Image (cartoon, rainbow, N blue to C red; front, top):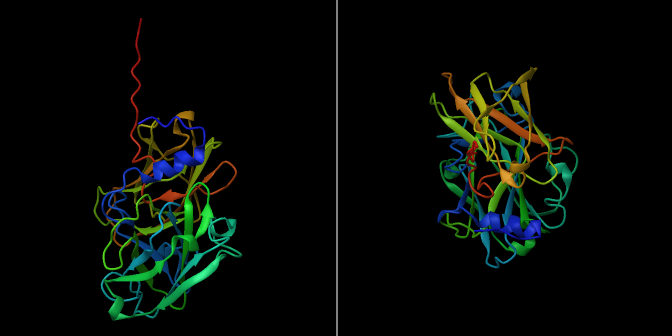
Length: 321
């Protein structure tokens, strides 16, 4: 299929719809190979992997979707089967859904360290979870939500925001998210997507496992900086793209952060990158926080459904005369 379109935003909306399976858009997705998202409560030690105790996610709904949908959270409570127990569960986590003006356009919610009015927009629903067995290892629904209650963004459609805040306590809340057209099952919203500008997640325990993040590179980007918090020297990080066969990061350490800078080629514009975390060290329950910024310090979004599909390196065949 050839995208001979002058309007970049139309191209982006079409690319959103590519590579959606029958199942709902789930974060982390099977392609990402990440066990759980993580939010620690505010009394936790930062060396446990969450640098600010706040995670913000956005849910994009195409403009032509008129039917209600659901934002679903798997295992939202603090306790039981999956969560990280720090000497007895004593934590609470607040989940809040926002729509309306400012839900996505406000820059305060898109930095690696949410500050100021990061909870901008119109509050549509909120719930705080503690050690609640009724929600352990189960899905909880926010919704039904009307698509037009989101903030209309030309390049995305209607966008909703989910702010996850670690409140009292020091435990780690491990959970997953789903964008679904159904209340009792995970069924995709056609063309929808979930994105975040700072990804805090649990890495796999298995040596040799590879986790994937899919940031999207827009026009005007010439370089990126990868910021990894609390990686604990767990393995290697490399980049696969249409023009990178496997570029390893050169991490510069600063306290508990590791920074790596990379040049963006012309071929990589308007494509996704595959940032891979390759585990080569035995460890358990490692949580890390990752953000990527362009040359101006503006954060790139990570999409659970990579725009344009999972990037594949394009081999260049040289013809000698």
